[in-house]
Image 1 (spheres, rainbow, N blue to C red):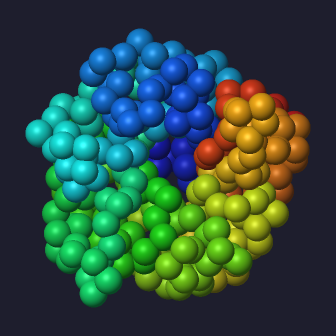
Image 2 (cartoon, rainbow, N blue to C red):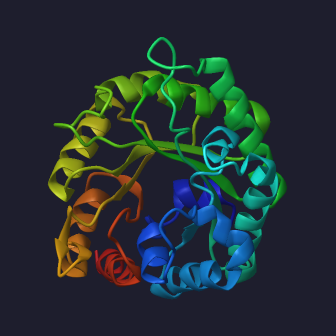
Amino acid sequence: MAFLDALKNGPVLIADGAMGTLLQAAGLPSGILPEEWNLSEPARIAAAHQSYLDAGADIILSNSFGGNRIKLSRAHQEGQAERLNAVAVEIVRRVVGTRAFVAGDMGPTGELLAPLGPLTPEMARQAYAEQARWLAAAGADLLVIETMSDLQEAQAAAEGALQATTLPIVCTMSFDTRQRTMMGVTPEKMVETLWPLGLAAIGANCGKSLEENLQVLTRLRAAGPTATLWIKPNAGLPRLVAGQVVYDVGPADFAEYARKFADLGARVVGGCCGSTPAHIAAVRQALAAR
């Protein structure tokens, strides 16, 4: 079944959980970009994807979150940009075959847009169009623009991706400041600006807490009754325990909220920072029992 058919007509789709959490547990050194491991440690990237596939995920995101040329240039990796993105998709495809959808993951540039910073909307559009072409050419089934806080950048990313490919495009923002993004964007403004662009889905990822994500989703639904909603929240907030970063929401509580998200009409539910294959397996079980 094609992704759009599954999104519209099938049961709620389960997206994967955090990638960074698993890679850090697997030994990703400080100062090394996760995308660099696509070339130097492909087996570890594949193992992370496999764990989410085994947990029951229907959608697996490629390890390309920081793969736009602007973000990579900060680590002097822009010359590897096309290869890093292509290999990211190829690794997922080798793992999942046709058992899950492969989503090309696209995150923020890390730069502020004018007038606050040096990046113009056109520069952002070009960077995202470029990354979208690489991910599409490598065989992604859809593209996911996520963890956006600046609505202008999110719009530029969506427009660039839509111009560059005919793949379904998803865009989510992180509402982590009293149900606003760090840049002050409300759920209502997001719907008003992004949903008319022709995206396959919009929604929220990351964020501050499951309860706040639930409130954000409620507002997204009220603002866009016909919008297709996607949500991938954190497993709570991180804290240090014996020198290790742990998150305060376990799989059972995470799955309880997954049911609430689905009851609100979310068509895709997954996890972001702190979520693990155990969280995704719990979500799969909880939604199957609805």
